[in-house]
Image (cartoon, rainbow, N blue to C red; front, side, top):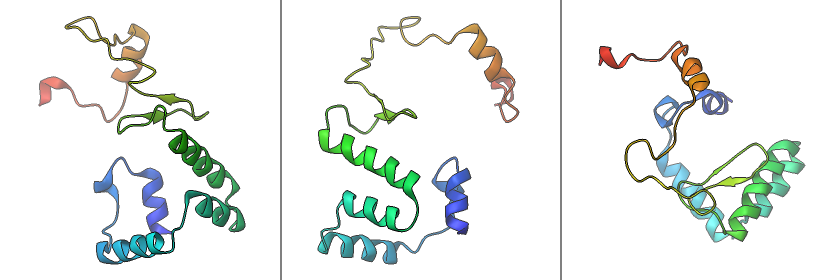
Length: 121
């Protein structure tokens, strides 16, 4: 339970408790030997009463099977639409040609409590 809670609020792997990597690798190896599939995981989640998580995992498995948009930097929105270099090309061609942040968004970003001023670095 502590690990699940840590994962819920973590900003990255450094916010997670230490893991027993040997046991993790043994478990992964066992799953590979038993040929556990993503659909097996989905079914287990449903049986465990985690229908919402099962639906999310199913959507990820579905996209992974299609594979059309997936690569290491692909991301999903809340509706599991894929945003990746395949469907959202990087057209950067130098300064002021890439993503431009709006003034409204910049004002919101400036109010983030944990923000670090560039001058303080």
